[in-house]
Length: 199
Image (cartoon, rainbow, N blue to C red; front, side, top):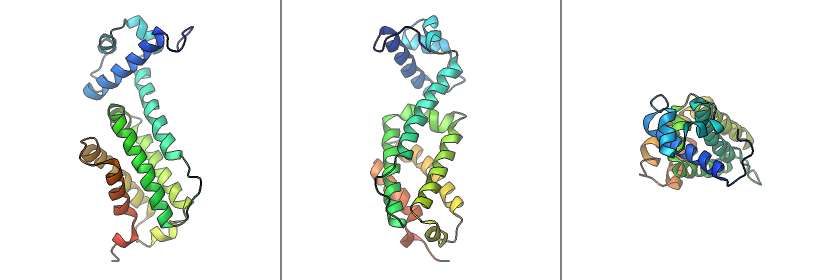
């Protein structure tokens, strides 16, 4: 933690530069192959400057994870002014949330690589996403409708999160699809009843 530094001071700029360079290096080289000396060299600051703001490489990495999670949590916990009950309301709400999440990911691709795919804490993000989806299903009173698909809701939700993760890698980060298109297709695939086959 900084002491005696004012916002927008050279110290704050140094900290921001360290964070920016750390994101780049961690996402390119991975946590274990990135050294503090690499980060300070890329940021063009001294090693003592690094330790003004971060206790260790691990604390810096955890800071980056928290930054990703804050953005993720802000999107997923944002509530609509009015909740429209039923599957249609759920699908509309979910498409909006997933699209916002995809936009956030496009704006922060390197931070996403760390926070969603590489860090040990990434499983927490996916677990929170699963819990948020189940919460939205209950909020919109969709339990009975989704049970008519003859698949447990937890299986559907876990599959959805797995597909979302895969599509982020193969389509979104590769810029093959727009966030709105990918969000629409993903949500429709899993949650539009007319697409389900009664077996």
